Image (cartoon, rainbow, N blue to C red; front, top):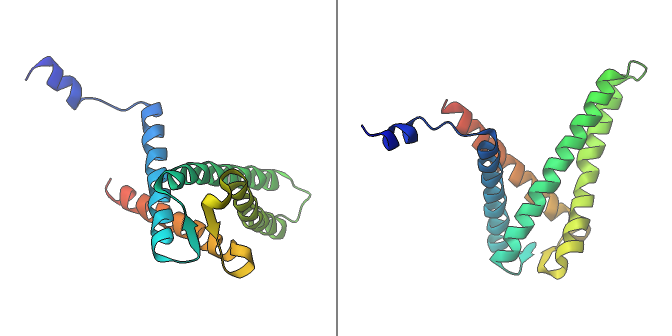
Amino acid sequence: MNQKTQESELHIPSSRQLFFLKYLTWILVDLTVLNFFAEYWDKVTITSFGVSLFIAITLQILLKMTIALEHRLSNYMKSNEKLDKKVLHIFSTWFVLFASKFVMLWILQFIFGDAIVFSGAYHGVVAFIVVVMAILAAEFALTRIYRSLA
């Protein structure tokens, strides 16, 4: 076995490479789910594949920011002894996760305008929430499959 073959077999990815692969995977999942809904559900309209790629990237950033905010708030609730932790913790988590969908929808509409349209009940909010829940479910399923392979 030559030197080059040994090096390629022993390659351990760096944390930056793992970070890249992780987010590339999630963006591709978002892209797939978005385009699936755009193709098969009349409540989601996206003008082109290129636009859907940028929407997937934006959604991934917004979802990760939401989760980070929720975790920060959760840690604050756990550290504050004065608060009725359980009720307030549940309410604040629900509020952040629910209200963030409206913020995300507004940001997508602001950035992409008519290139993406969610229609239907409550001016497309229900359709948007369905798409986001499908994205999160797909990410969860892939994570479970990945971990089961270890």
